[in-house]
Image (cartoon, rainbow, N blue to C red; front, top):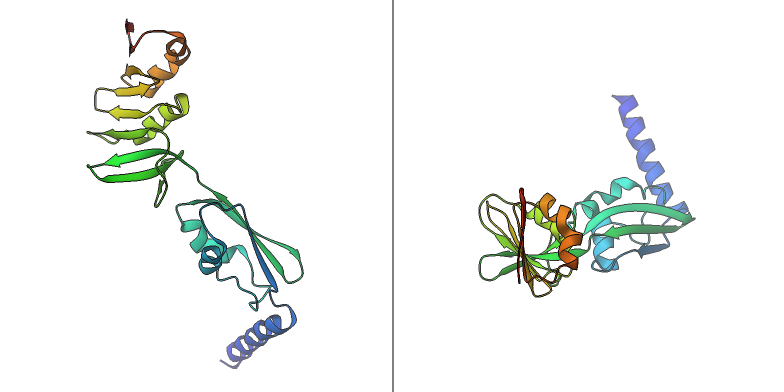
Length: 196
């Protein structure tokens, strides 16, 4: 029991000494566009006066749990200086749920709360095919809408309508669809149907 007490006292003394001898003097936050510096500091608990030695990746748990954060790391470029380097997710499409709900979607399918409306609107019914719709967003980033059903995908792109049973089929004919003057383009497993 006395060894445990001595160990606890030693750790407490080391922590207090680290606050006095090596405090954080400056916190830098880089790589953020959506999150603000105060939000990052609140999520990490890194403020001037805290211990510089205890500024470890353990402090990033809550920050990494934020849906906007794709990756984060801590750097200590100089004594007393802590830099939090954040890579944020970027909205690439808007997920439509119901009549009123519009949610920003990152390229990996993460819902981004508070994201502006960008890219094509994705909506549909039946089994969730959002991930596959995001593959179509990468093929046709300037599409205005992507609608899915259990049967396939309907894409409104540059005044044209494209339809295919899956993203793989659209990928196979994407270059051909870009060169076609047809207003309706249907890609089936057995071939392609065009309508002007």
